[in-house]
Image 1: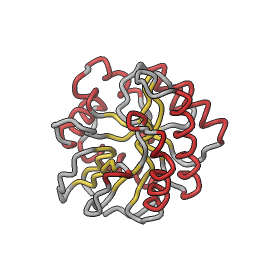
Image 2 (image 1 turned 120 degrees about the vertical axis):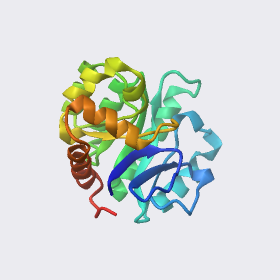
Image 3 (image 1 turned 60 degrees about the vertical axis):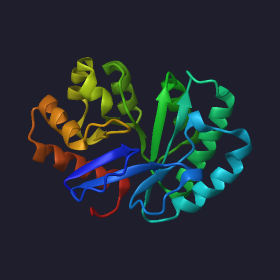
Image 4 (image 1 turned 60 degrees about the horizontal axis):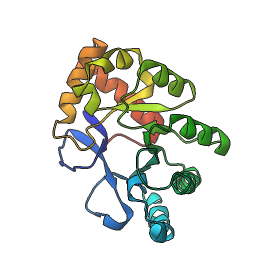
Length: 218
């Protein structure tokens, strides 16, 4: 593994990249080598929750399922927040049961995510994907044991540069999510911001991968 794409919706099948592809329970693709699976808060349908959780539990037990997610909380959508909380907590219970890291979608709900982590005593790694907020929020999340993944906003928002520069090297990942740019482009800007070589950055990400996913590199 030269590059690790922590979170993507587009499987590109590059030999140099380990891609952690986001999957949905009702649109599962068996051909994808490594995946995460979860109920995104945008796609919560109350009548489907039980069936989707059953699918998620079955898929989580497979070796090539690296994480649960993306799942989480979003205060800017119409799905009732109480329902989002219920579905998020049900998924966290599955992640804890099968010892899978959790990929988190969080919009305007960092306090609630942190409180749930503490309340439920979640010990599996929890990673906020697509991070784009200020340094104060980043450092508080790191202090509380979260990892942060950077991608689209690192490329498009220069204000994120000091936030990323301050990130401890053992607490971040890089991703493309749904953008057209490649993970190599994300690594390039990240290495520039950290003032390290691509090789050094690859070593950092590889170490973080081992710590979080606890499986051999491929």
